[in-house]
Length: 110
Length: 114
Image (cartoon, rainbow over all chains, first blue to last red):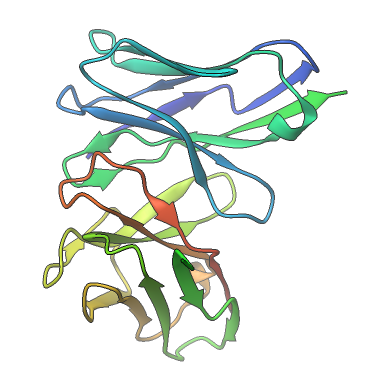
C-alpha cells in the first residue's frame, strides 16, 4: 500500500498570510491527488484535486502543485482567512484505494 | 438530494456486542467506502466496494464485515465489538468505479465500546 507523509502537522499563520502543506507518497503509479478540509466535528470535504498529467491547478485562493518525479504534492492557500482554520488531509489514490495523510491542523490568527 | 446518509449518529456498545452501521447514497455512485478516524491518525480505509456486487478489504479490515446491499446501500458490521474499535466511522461514495474522483462523505457515526 501507499506510504503517505504530510507536513507540518500543525501550522499557525496570521490572517492574510499564505499557508503551504506538503504531502509525500511512495507509489509512483498514483495518478489522482486530492486535498480534503475537515472542520471540527464535521465530515471531510474536497477542496481541490489534481491529476498526474497536470503540474498545477488553481481555484481562487487555493492551489495544488504536483511533482511526480519527487513524489510529492502541496496545498497552497493565499490570503488566509479565519474560516480557513481546519484540518487538511491529502489522500493520494493507489489503485482503488485512497490513503489519507495524518492531517495538518491550520489555525489562522485574526 | 440528501447525498450520503449514515445511521446511527452515536452508539455506545459493550465489549462483545454486535451492531451494523448503515450507509446510503442517492447520487447513483458506483463506489462506496467505509473509513475509521482516530485522533492523530487521519482516515483509514476499512472496506470498499468498487461497484455493486463487489467488496474488497482496505487497510484495517480485521473485526469488520460489509455488505453492498444494492447500488445505494453499503453496511458495516461489527460482530464482536472491542474497545479498540472506538472511533468515528465515515461512509463515502464516488462516481467512478476505478476511483480518481471526488469522494462524498456522510456525517459520521461516533462509536464508543466500553
